[in-house]
Length: 316
Image (cartoon, rainbow, N blue to C red; front, side, top):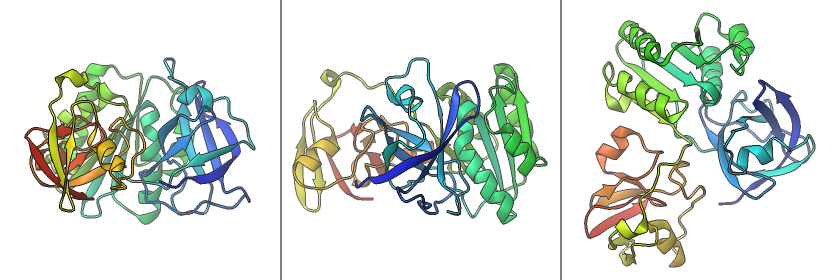
């Protein structure tokens, strides 16, 4: 996948651990518009690629912005980017969207915790300007750790529900109360730490259909050792390829010239998703929604495998 050269035009310290990086083309112009909720790959100074949600206004009138939390146990991605300075050059991918606003929804319930506010910020800003029906529930440990809270209070105070310092046991109750009151046809969007997301999705599915719950997760699922894998076959465009136990579908396909885009290699970015024409996927990713996995119609080919001896795939 081709990368875009960008320059860090401005850096803002949002909280003690979160910085926002504003990105432009090398000539200082805007990179362009994107759909609310989209994310990009960012190639950092150490050549590590990570995925970050865009949190700028999506209409393209301002630079791209990504807010990055410096993680205590960073594997080099967030720590290296926190050392980037204004004027430094980076590379990014084109925006991709796994959390896109569903235009058929009567109402949108946005639920975020911690740095999970980033995609919800662009979605809330878009819905507010467009006159969409929505509410935003933002969970954070404290006001000091709630990035963008002043901006949200200024732009959409009537739609914002800031839950600061709320205990875990109370989070589900607050979201359940909100969904009870939500109009019929509502859709729910969730982003935050893995445990929080699992809990919120479970609550949401008590009130809305699974296909009306949308998630974004940038935490890779733990993968079993390759010794537990079985070999299987994949057919693509009439050609059959053997997928051995120690190689992924996308690696084998690309080794044979099939040109399947890939980025994270961890099942969290969605770049390598392909359509399943026949066969049953064994999903091991953290990018597809429950309804997408249940449908059996798509597969993240960088980590997921086949439950049977053969699958027929197509480009997504």
